[in-house]
Length: 252
Image (cartoon, rainbow, N blue to C red; front, side, top):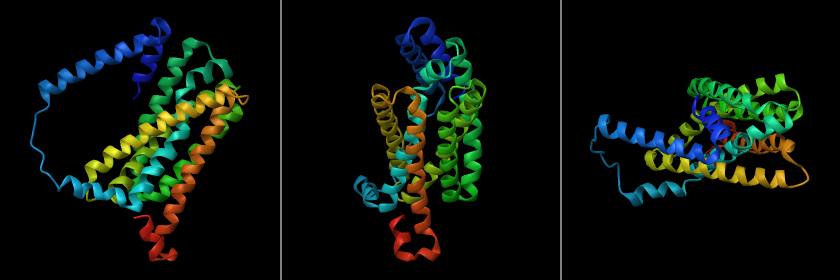
């Protein structure tokens, strides 16, 4: 998390973007060798039939949990996909400093992931809503201050921290709503994250190709993240006792 993105960026700058994919392939082959050599193969006890696990797809709460993952991550992923050109073309950083800034993003991500787990243990939906709101504010500040290098460097770190602080709560939310099929639930949650990544890259490209331009991408990311926060907030409100049993059941 900390070293992968800056190393990949440095390789791409020195040898071209295709070399990064070659490096990923080499690291994956090494990881595969480690798995074969040191990870034991054990039988997995089946928790139920495949059809039984697929029934979780009908759960309203599970559907909303996946939607929170997809929408809540799409905004920050849009910024991360285009972070390097934002830093060089808008903020004016030299290309050689980009790996160091992405390293700062990764350090923030590692710390944010730990903090997010701690917060979700104490107040799952409340912390998730608060972190999504904070992330949308940071992305909006990124858009507002992106021509100033020192604030931008700080905001890169904060973006990484908040982007990964929301993941433990999202994962936990999926497990809570898919308690009868947790493996399938987590697998589909990972798919939701990847769908968000693909959509955000496409949407960011459309924004860059329009008259709005590259510098509008952080604000668009802030708006999408805020939509994810509103979705989580609506679900959280339905679960509060004062809103009634019917609405609570709709969110699992």
